Length: 182
Image (cartoon, rainbow, N blue to C red; front, side, top):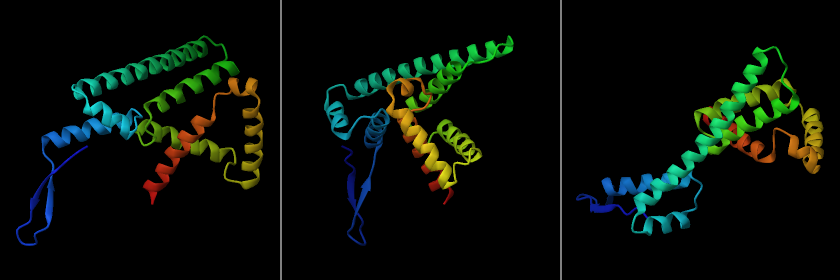
């Protein structure tokens, strides 16, 4: 998809790759489409079209509009929760579950577990898990058993603030932190 210009090194005869503005622009388009979750075959089809840049920008606009809507819903929930607390009323379990689900899903919608927002959430997630004794094997096993039971009951699973997708995302974010720490 990105084809560099090749030159010859005079002394060794080896080839050098040179990337110009067109190749850099194409690479940006590919990376933007990858971040939107598209596979390389789909990206190839989009970029092979007559209006590749227009198609890329349309997809980016669509993704940003979805992100903005999700973030607006999450912000609305946070504001409602703060207003409820300010008026002296407690938050219900449903309030907390919805708030957690929407705010974590908003981070996940962005889709990058290496983003600063996801990394901050992963740090807080790991610290909270540690407070709960999450590093002790027996506690982890008991927690896993409770979690599996809850996930296997569709009525309970639908009410939970967390789901398998969130756990996978957080594990990727935490794995990134561990790799950075090495």
